[in-house]
Length: 403
Image (cartoon, rainbow, N blue to C red; front, side):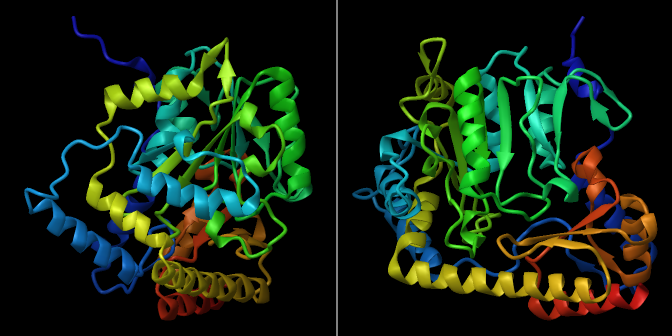
Protein backbone atom coordinates (compact mmCIF):
# COMPACT_ATOMS: atom_id res chain seq x y z
CA UNK A 1 0.00 0.00 0.00
CA UNK A 2 1.26 3.45 -0.93
CA UNK A 3 2.42 5.43 2.09
CA UNK A 4 2.30 9.22 2.27
CA UNK A 5 4.58 11.60 4.12
CA UNK A 6 2.66 11.75 7.37
CA UNK A 7 4.35 14.99 8.36
CA UNK A 8 2.19 16.84 5.81
CA UNK A 9 -0.89 15.49 7.55
CA UNK A 10 0.23 17.17 10.76
CA UNK A 11 0.26 20.62 9.15
CA UNK A 12 -2.35 22.96 10.66
CA UNK A 13 -4.71 24.41 8.04
CA UNK A 14 -3.27 26.17 5.01
CA UNK A 15 -0.14 28.24 4.51
CA UNK A 16 -0.59 31.65 6.18
CA UNK A 17 -0.61 33.76 3.03
CA UNK A 18 -2.87 31.31 1.24
CA UNK A 19 -5.38 31.76 4.07
CA UNK A 20 -5.08 35.54 3.88
CA UNK A 21 -5.74 35.37 0.14
CA UNK A 22 -8.68 33.00 0.68
CA UNK A 23 -10.37 35.29 3.20
CA UNK A 24 -9.80 38.35 1.02
CA UNK A 25 -11.27 36.57 -2.01
CA UNK A 26 -14.27 35.38 0.01
CA UNK A 27 -14.97 38.93 1.19
CA UNK A 28 -14.69 40.33 -2.33
CA UNK A 29 -16.96 37.59 -3.63
CA UNK A 30 -19.59 38.37 -1.02
CA UNK A 31 -19.22 42.14 -1.58
CA UNK A 32 -18.63 42.58 -5.33
CA UNK A 33 -18.70 46.38 -5.06
CA UNK A 34 -16.11 46.56 -2.29
CA UNK A 35 -12.95 48.55 -3.02
CA UNK A 36 -10.40 46.36 -1.24
CA UNK A 37 -6.83 47.60 -0.68
CA UNK A 38 -4.26 44.84 -0.21
CA UNK A 39 -1.43 45.50 2.23
CA UNK A 40 -1.11 41.90 3.39
CA UNK A 41 1.05 39.68 1.21
CA UNK A 42 4.41 41.35 0.62
CA UNK A 43 4.28 41.47 -3.16
CA UNK A 44 5.75 44.44 -4.99
CA UNK A 45 3.64 46.71 -7.21
CA UNK A 46 6.21 48.73 -9.17
CA UNK A 47 7.48 47.30 -12.48
CA UNK A 48 10.99 45.93 -12.96
CA UNK A 49 13.73 48.56 -13.30
CA UNK A 50 14.18 49.63 -16.91
CA UNK A 51 17.78 48.42 -16.87
CA UNK A 52 16.62 44.90 -15.95
CA UNK A 53 13.94 44.87 -18.64
CA UNK A 54 16.46 45.96 -21.26
CA UNK A 55 18.87 43.24 -20.12
CA UNK A 56 16.07 40.65 -20.31
CA UNK A 57 15.36 41.66 -23.89
CA UNK A 58 19.00 41.52 -24.91
CA UNK A 59 19.39 38.10 -23.33
CA UNK A 60 16.21 36.87 -25.01
CA UNK A 61 17.61 37.99 -28.36
CA UNK A 62 20.80 36.06 -27.60
CA UNK A 63 18.72 32.94 -27.00
CA UNK A 64 17.25 33.35 -30.48
CA UNK A 65 20.58 33.14 -32.27
CA UNK A 66 22.62 29.99 -32.76
CA UNK A 67 25.86 31.89 -32.12
CA UNK A 68 24.78 33.22 -28.71
CA UNK A 69 22.25 30.61 -27.57
CA UNK A 70 22.78 29.31 -24.01
CA UNK A 71 21.71 25.84 -22.87
CA UNK A 72 22.25 24.39 -19.42
CA UNK A 73 24.16 26.84 -17.28
CA UNK A 74 26.39 26.19 -14.25
CA UNK A 75 24.47 24.69 -11.33
CA UNK A 76 25.89 27.32 -9.02
CA UNK A 77 25.12 30.21 -11.39
CA UNK A 78 27.03 32.24 -13.96
CA UNK A 79 30.20 33.95 -12.81
CA UNK A 80 29.08 37.34 -14.14
CA UNK A 81 26.25 37.49 -11.59
CA UNK A 82 28.10 35.86 -8.72
CA UNK A 83 30.97 38.33 -9.12
CA UNK A 84 28.58 41.30 -9.32
CA UNK A 85 26.87 40.25 -6.08
CA UNK A 86 30.18 39.98 -4.24
CA UNK A 87 31.42 43.30 -5.63
CA UNK A 88 28.32 45.24 -4.58
CA UNK A 89 26.73 43.36 -1.65
CA UNK A 90 29.70 42.00 0.27
CA UNK A 91 33.05 43.65 -0.54
CA UNK A 92 31.91 47.21 0.33
CA UNK A 93 31.00 46.05 3.84
CA UNK A 94 34.18 44.15 4.55
CA UNK A 95 32.55 40.74 4.22
CA UNK A 96 35.26 38.47 2.82
CA UNK A 97 33.07 36.27 0.64
CA UNK A 98 34.26 34.94 -2.71
CA UNK A 99 32.16 34.53 -5.84
CA UNK A 100 32.90 30.80 -5.69
CA UNK A 101 30.96 30.63 -2.40
CA UNK A 102 27.64 31.73 -3.95
CA UNK A 103 24.81 29.71 -5.47
CA UNK A 104 22.32 31.55 -7.69
CA UNK A 105 18.74 30.36 -7.21
CA UNK A 106 15.16 31.23 -8.08
CA UNK A 107 14.73 33.14 -4.81
CA UNK A 108 15.45 32.98 -1.10
CA UNK A 109 12.20 31.23 -0.15
CA UNK A 110 13.03 27.98 -1.91
CA UNK A 111 16.55 27.82 -0.53
CA UNK A 112 15.38 28.66 3.00
CA UNK A 113 12.96 25.75 2.75
CA UNK A 114 15.28 23.29 1.01
CA UNK A 115 18.51 23.90 2.92
CA UNK A 116 17.35 21.41 5.54
CA UNK A 117 17.88 18.61 3.04
CA UNK A 118 21.61 18.56 3.80
CA UNK A 119 21.05 18.21 7.56
CA UNK A 120 19.92 15.22 9.59
CA UNK A 121 16.21 14.77 10.26
CA UNK A 122 16.85 14.77 14.01
CA UNK A 123 18.47 18.22 14.06
CA UNK A 124 16.98 20.59 16.61
CA UNK A 125 15.69 23.79 14.97
CA UNK A 126 15.36 27.21 16.61
CA UNK A 127 13.35 30.08 15.16
CA UNK A 128 12.57 33.63 16.14
CA UNK A 129 8.97 33.97 17.30
CA UNK A 130 7.24 35.57 15.40
CA UNK A 131 8.83 34.09 12.30
CA UNK A 132 8.49 33.85 8.52
CA UNK A 133 6.33 30.69 8.24
CA UNK A 134 8.52 28.90 5.68
CA UNK A 135 11.24 28.24 8.27
CA UNK A 136 8.86 26.33 10.51
CA UNK A 137 6.65 24.71 7.86
CA UNK A 138 9.58 23.33 5.82
CA UNK A 139 11.05 21.67 8.91
CA UNK A 140 7.64 20.35 9.92
CA UNK A 141 7.30 18.74 6.50
CA UNK A 142 10.73 17.15 7.00
CA UNK A 143 9.76 15.69 10.36
CA UNK A 144 11.89 17.92 12.59
CA UNK A 145 9.08 19.87 14.24
CA UNK A 146 7.37 17.08 16.16
CA UNK A 147 3.64 17.48 16.77
CA UNK A 148 1.48 20.58 16.55
CA UNK A 149 -0.77 21.57 19.45
CA UNK A 150 -1.99 24.82 20.99
CA UNK A 151 -0.42 26.92 18.25
CA UNK A 152 3.14 25.53 18.39
CA UNK A 153 5.29 22.54 17.43
CA UNK A 154 6.65 20.61 20.39
CA UNK A 155 10.15 20.04 18.94
CA UNK A 156 10.80 23.56 17.66
CA UNK A 157 12.78 25.92 19.89
CA UNK A 158 10.75 29.15 19.83
CA UNK A 159 12.77 32.24 20.71
CA UNK A 160 10.29 34.97 21.70
CA UNK A 161 10.77 38.38 20.09
CA UNK A 162 8.56 40.83 21.92
CA UNK A 163 8.40 44.51 22.77
CA UNK A 164 10.05 43.63 26.10
CA UNK A 165 13.28 42.49 24.41
CA UNK A 166 13.16 44.91 21.48
CA UNK A 167 12.03 42.10 19.17
CA UNK A 168 15.46 40.47 19.30
CA UNK A 169 15.77 36.95 20.75
CA UNK A 170 17.81 35.81 23.71
CA UNK A 171 20.25 32.94 23.31
CA UNK A 172 18.28 29.71 23.90
CA UNK A 173 18.97 27.44 26.86
CA UNK A 174 18.31 24.34 24.75
CA UNK A 175 21.13 24.31 22.22
CA UNK A 176 19.78 24.02 18.65
CA UNK A 177 21.60 22.59 15.66
CA UNK A 178 20.02 25.00 13.19
CA UNK A 179 19.21 28.62 14.04
CA UNK A 180 17.06 30.70 11.69
CA UNK A 181 17.63 34.45 11.95
CA UNK A 182 16.07 37.08 9.67
CA UNK A 183 17.15 40.74 9.83
CA UNK A 184 15.74 43.13 8.90
CA UNK A 185 13.01 40.97 10.27
CA UNK A 186 9.90 39.68 8.60
CA UNK A 187 7.37 40.28 10.15
CA UNK A 188 8.40 42.73 12.89
CA UNK A 189 10.41 45.06 10.64
CA UNK A 190 13.22 45.37 13.18
CA UNK A 191 16.91 45.37 12.22
CA UNK A 192 19.87 43.93 14.14
CA UNK A 193 23.07 45.64 15.24
CA UNK A 194 26.57 44.18 15.21
CA UNK A 195 26.48 44.05 18.99
CA UNK A 196 23.32 41.96 18.86
CA UNK A 197 24.60 39.52 16.22
CA UNK A 198 28.08 38.95 17.62
CA UNK A 199 26.95 36.75 20.58
CA UNK A 200 24.99 34.56 18.14
CA UNK A 201 28.05 33.93 16.00
CA UNK A 202 30.10 33.13 19.10
CA UNK A 203 27.31 30.87 20.42
CA UNK A 204 27.04 28.96 17.13
CA UNK A 205 30.79 28.46 16.89
CA UNK A 206 30.97 27.32 20.51
CA UNK A 207 28.21 24.74 20.12
CA UNK A 208 28.69 23.69 16.50
CA UNK A 209 25.34 25.13 15.44
CA UNK A 210 24.67 26.55 11.98
CA UNK A 211 22.99 29.94 11.57
CA UNK A 212 20.63 30.22 8.60
CA UNK A 213 20.58 33.96 8.01
CA UNK A 214 17.88 35.46 5.80
CA UNK A 215 19.02 38.89 4.61
CA UNK A 216 16.35 39.36 1.93
CA UNK A 217 15.52 42.91 3.08
CA UNK A 218 19.07 44.26 3.46
CA UNK A 219 18.52 46.91 0.75
CA UNK A 220 15.87 48.63 2.90
CA UNK A 221 18.21 49.42 5.76
CA UNK A 222 18.69 53.17 6.13
CA UNK A 223 21.00 53.23 9.16
CA UNK A 224 24.57 52.98 7.79
CA UNK A 225 25.88 51.57 11.07
CA UNK A 226 23.79 48.38 10.77
CA UNK A 227 25.36 45.24 9.25
CA UNK A 228 24.08 44.24 5.82
CA UNK A 229 25.44 40.70 6.12
CA UNK A 230 26.09 38.19 8.88
CA UNK A 231 29.61 37.91 7.42
CA UNK A 232 30.44 41.35 8.75
CA UNK A 233 30.65 39.61 12.13
CA UNK A 234 34.04 37.91 12.75
CA UNK A 235 33.77 34.13 12.74
CA UNK A 236 30.49 33.96 10.82
CA UNK A 237 32.20 32.25 7.89
CA UNK A 238 32.62 29.22 10.17
CA UNK A 239 28.99 28.94 11.24
CA UNK A 240 26.57 30.78 8.93
CA UNK A 241 24.72 30.29 5.65
CA UNK A 242 23.18 33.46 4.21
CA UNK A 243 20.26 33.93 1.82
CA UNK A 244 19.82 36.96 -0.44
CA UNK A 245 17.10 37.96 -2.88
CA UNK A 246 16.26 40.32 -5.72
CA UNK A 247 12.52 39.93 -5.07
CA UNK A 248 11.99 43.00 -2.91
CA UNK A 249 15.24 44.76 -3.80
CA UNK A 250 14.46 45.02 -7.52
CA UNK A 251 10.89 43.77 -7.92
CA UNK A 252 11.78 40.19 -8.91
CA UNK A 253 8.88 38.55 -7.04
CA UNK A 254 7.50 37.27 -10.36
CA UNK A 255 10.86 37.08 -12.14
CA UNK A 256 12.51 34.92 -9.44
CA UNK A 257 16.18 35.25 -8.62
CA UNK A 258 18.18 35.11 -5.41
CA UNK A 259 21.31 33.55 -3.96
CA UNK A 260 22.71 31.50 -1.11
CA UNK A 261 26.18 31.92 0.39
CA UNK A 262 27.93 28.90 1.89
CA UNK A 263 31.52 29.75 2.85
CA UNK A 264 34.19 27.21 2.01
CA UNK A 265 35.30 27.35 5.64
CA UNK A 266 31.92 26.09 6.87
CA UNK A 267 32.28 22.42 7.74
CA UNK A 268 30.50 20.07 10.11
CA UNK A 269 31.59 16.54 10.93
CA UNK A 270 34.60 17.16 8.70
CA UNK A 271 32.35 17.67 5.67
CA UNK A 272 32.06 20.78 3.50
CA UNK A 273 28.53 22.17 3.56
CA UNK A 274 29.31 23.90 0.26
CA UNK A 275 30.03 20.55 -1.37
CA UNK A 276 26.90 19.01 0.10
CA UNK A 277 24.70 21.86 -1.19
CA UNK A 278 26.39 21.60 -4.59
CA UNK A 279 25.42 17.93 -4.65
CA UNK A 280 21.86 18.89 -3.74
CA UNK A 281 21.60 21.58 -6.41
CA UNK A 282 23.18 19.51 -9.17
CA UNK A 283 20.69 16.73 -8.41
CA UNK A 284 17.49 18.69 -7.84
CA UNK A 285 17.99 21.98 -9.70
CA UNK A 286 19.19 22.77 -13.20
CA UNK A 287 20.07 26.36 -12.48
CA UNK A 288 18.40 29.75 -12.80
CA UNK A 289 17.80 30.70 -16.42
CA UNK A 290 20.41 32.73 -18.30
CA UNK A 291 17.98 35.53 -19.21
CA UNK A 292 16.95 35.98 -15.56
CA UNK A 293 20.56 36.07 -14.39
CA UNK A 294 21.36 38.73 -16.98
CA UNK A 295 18.41 40.77 -15.71
CA UNK A 296 19.69 40.40 -12.14
CA UNK A 297 23.19 41.45 -13.21
CA UNK A 298 21.68 44.69 -14.56
CA UNK A 299 20.61 45.58 -11.00
CA UNK A 300 24.25 46.43 -10.38
CA UNK A 301 24.75 48.62 -13.44
CA UNK A 302 24.86 52.39 -12.76
CA UNK A 303 21.41 52.76 -14.32
CA UNK A 304 20.09 49.79 -12.38
CA UNK A 305 21.45 51.08 -9.08
CA UNK A 306 19.76 54.44 -9.60
CA UNK A 307 16.46 52.85 -10.58
CA UNK A 308 16.54 50.42 -7.66
CA UNK A 309 17.29 53.26 -5.24
CA UNK A 310 14.26 55.14 -6.58
CA UNK A 311 12.09 52.04 -6.16
CA UNK A 312 13.24 51.45 -2.59
CA UNK A 313 12.70 55.13 -1.78
CA UNK A 314 9.12 54.85 -3.05
CA UNK A 315 8.35 51.89 -0.80
CA UNK A 316 10.11 53.38 2.20
CA UNK A 317 8.01 56.54 1.82
CA UNK A 318 4.99 54.23 2.00
CA UNK A 319 6.46 52.73 5.17
CA UNK A 320 6.86 56.21 6.67
CA UNK A 321 3.24 57.09 5.83
CA UNK A 322 1.99 53.87 7.41
CA UNK A 323 4.17 54.09 10.52
CA UNK A 324 3.41 57.74 11.23
CA UNK A 325 -0.27 57.43 10.40
CA UNK A 326 -0.89 54.43 12.62
CA UNK A 327 1.21 55.88 15.42
CA UNK A 328 -0.76 59.14 15.24
CA UNK A 329 -3.93 57.07 15.59
CA UNK A 330 -2.65 55.78 18.91
CA UNK A 331 -1.48 52.35 17.80
CA UNK A 332 1.68 50.76 19.23
CA UNK A 333 3.78 50.56 16.07
CA UNK A 334 7.19 49.06 15.21
CA UNK A 335 9.43 48.68 12.13
CA UNK A 336 9.14 50.64 8.92
CA UNK A 337 12.41 52.56 9.28
CA UNK A 338 14.94 49.90 8.20
CA UNK A 339 12.49 47.54 6.50
CA UNK A 340 9.33 47.62 4.37
CA UNK A 341 7.17 46.05 7.09
CA UNK A 342 5.22 47.72 9.88
CA UNK A 343 4.20 45.68 12.92
CA UNK A 344 1.49 47.03 15.21
CA UNK A 345 -0.50 45.83 18.19
CA UNK A 346 -4.23 45.36 17.68
CA UNK A 347 -6.18 47.80 19.88
CA UNK A 348 -8.16 46.92 22.96
CA UNK A 349 -6.59 43.50 23.37
CA UNK A 350 -8.16 42.09 20.22
CA UNK A 351 -6.64 38.91 18.81
CA UNK A 352 -4.92 38.97 15.44
CA UNK A 353 -7.49 37.21 13.26
CA UNK A 354 -10.40 39.13 14.82
CA UNK A 355 -8.77 42.47 14.05
CA UNK A 356 -7.74 41.22 10.59
CA UNK A 357 -11.41 40.45 9.91
CA UNK A 358 -12.47 43.82 11.29
CA UNK A 359 -10.00 45.69 9.09
CA UNK A 360 -11.23 43.72 6.08
CA UNK A 361 -14.93 44.16 6.75
CA UNK A 362 -14.97 47.73 8.07
CA UNK A 363 -11.99 49.36 6.35
CA UNK A 364 -11.75 47.00 3.37
CA UNK A 365 -8.00 46.72 3.93
CA UNK A 366 -6.17 43.38 3.76
CA UNK A 367 -3.35 42.93 6.29
CA UNK A 368 -1.62 39.88 7.78
CA UNK A 369 -2.51 38.58 11.27
CA UNK A 370 0.48 38.35 13.57
CA UNK A 371 -0.56 35.02 15.07
CA UNK A 372 0.13 33.43 11.69
CA UNK A 373 3.83 34.09 12.30
CA UNK A 374 3.95 32.23 15.61
CA UNK A 375 2.69 32.29 19.21
CA UNK A 376 4.40 35.60 20.09
CA UNK A 377 2.71 37.25 17.11
CA UNK A 378 -0.71 36.97 18.67
CA UNK A 379 -2.35 40.33 19.11
CA UNK A 380 -0.29 41.96 16.34
CA UNK A 381 -0.86 42.83 12.68
CA UNK A 382 1.72 43.12 9.88
CA UNK A 383 1.31 45.69 7.10
CA UNK A 384 3.46 45.83 3.97
CA UNK A 385 4.75 49.01 2.33
CA UNK A 386 4.83 47.44 -1.14
CA UNK A 387 1.52 48.89 -2.29
CA UNK A 388 0.69 51.82 -4.54
CA UNK A 389 1.47 55.13 -2.81
CA UNK A 390 -1.97 56.71 -3.21
CA UNK A 391 -3.73 53.49 -2.18
CA UNK A 392 -1.42 53.15 0.81
CA UNK A 393 -2.33 56.63 2.04
CA UNK A 394 -6.01 55.82 1.57
CA UNK A 395 -5.63 52.55 3.47
CA UNK A 396 -4.07 54.36 6.42
CA UNK A 397 -6.93 56.86 6.50
CA UNK A 398 -9.46 54.03 6.39
CA UNK A 399 -7.79 52.25 9.30
CA UNK A 400 -7.68 55.45 11.31
CA UNK A 401 -11.38 56.05 10.63
CA UNK A 402 -12.50 52.80 12.30
CA UNK A 403 -10.42 53.20 15.45
